[in-house]
Image (cartoon, rainbow, N blue to C red; front, side):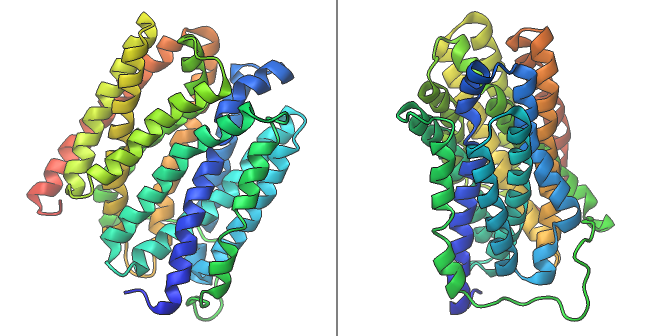
Length: 391
């Protein structure tokens, strides 16, 4: 149960999750403009996009359990400061090196924020860890859904399109400072503790953890490919403005939110099973739509893909929340996030070289194949958990 002193912390955690995820997709509708003004290619776009999850993974591997040792509030404040610095670096970047560096710093701040905010919600939500996990994934989904739309709209209406979106996010990051200041200092580990400590998953949890990890792979493959190449898909269909690119990406991400709301009564196993099937169907329809230049198929496929990604996120995050031992919530969730963000980096980096040699359709067909492999792992896993009455 959350005490009264913890309520401001939980509110701050929710707001920071939304803003951090908005920030993660802020550059997405801006990539075509970077390409036009800076003369960078698709491979460079992949590198810029991948800088963010690389920063997240590097931080989480050694500092993922930091808030278990030094407190949720302290870690949230640290992450907020790092993310604020990243927004300024990105907004005032003048070359590719600064842009990639800013994305790495942004990932580092987001990693600290997301792991500590999720742990705070799962351990202290007044309705228990399952509801805390639901609030966590809903906030994440809301942030990634509106991020491209907000950034694209700001860029389209501003005479400084590569600066204003980042400054707006920087200002929004200041909003949770008041509730963080009012929250009580939460418990920290007693005695001498190590700042850097590798995250690990106990052997007894590995089988169930692997099901959640592969399900979140499906979600973040969606985020990775649409985040990096959603604008190219939009351009292929003739939608060329930043706002139009942002709307296409946001269509997928709004469907992620719809899945959170519509699927919250599903069991963890059912959500993941249905999610991987819908993701496979969504990638297939999107690939077919791009190949045939069918806007209807692309939009339908994008929406179905978002529903699948959202259900995978919902079920897998809830599973991680209930298997995490007390006092190690941030560490286990960070291990889960390492898989999630390594997927973001890997899909973006792999897609770039492929896209320079093969048509966009080839990237989407590869996503269909990977989704098939994901389903082949997750579906037997959730059936096994159902037999064990751990659904």
